[in-house]
Image 1: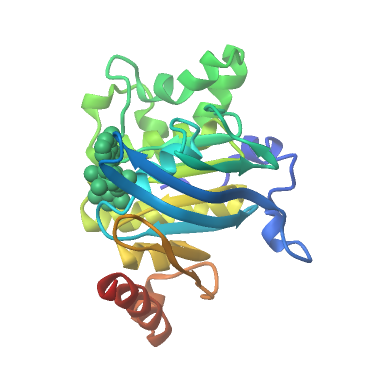
Image 2: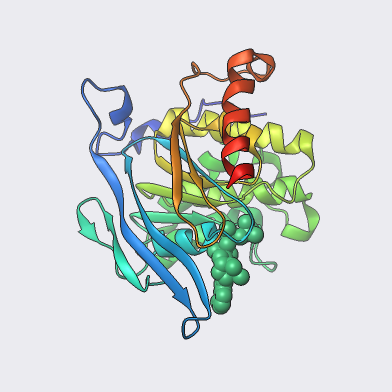
Length: 277
Ligand SMILES: Nc1ncnc2c1ncn2[C@@H]1O[C@H](COP(=O)(O)OP(=O)(O)OP(=O)(O)O)[C@@H](O)[C@H]1O
């Protein structure tokens, strides 16, 4: 599997100084979720109830909570794809009122690739839409396909790839757009456990190199603890924030850490919060 050797990626490093997490002092707030309330369909379903939190630049933040608590709704709002009934989302100091893929990119649960385009063309496509020239977009797509270990498969169509490979293409496409903030809605949910673990490690490898701000929705508490700097725990619907939990495990994360007492304590704590709610 490709590692972090793609020189082109260094050249494209984030001009915002996205490695803010490693700089002295607190990193700037990248995303502020300000008192979000949301009601679907003429008051029939109250989905979110005063959701309020901030995410600092360069952090990997998990969003967990019981099924139907409003995680996907919140992510759609963070992507500018849906407006809340009340409250606002502020990204880099500006209110987000519409999709802005240069600032906020999204990787959905379904790999959602265009079936008639090759892996490389799929990764390139959003760059093409943004008017980036062929040479540059191809170089960027190839670098990220290399990073997710798919250099040899870049000319294959999605139906010629395994489920795990399609997800890798999808993740390469998300990072390739080089958004400041990357939203991920259960990107590995459809994968078997082994592929899921591998993909989690690949994602961390890319993130450690790029230090994007990541907001990652998952149902897996193990995955949340393993990947994240912080886990935001939501209540049953209508979703509220129950607690923000700092995951103070060292990086790089390793498989062995999962067997430690600290890892177990963090996971149990989140589980008890969700269960008792
Ligand atoms: N378009 C809609 N119209 C009406 N109700 C909706 C709509 N979309 C979502 N809901 C309801 O809003 C609530 C929150 O849904 P949402 O999909 O955001 O939750 P979730 O936490 O992502 O769920 P899951 O973990 O099961 O994916 C649920 O009760 C859902 O049924």
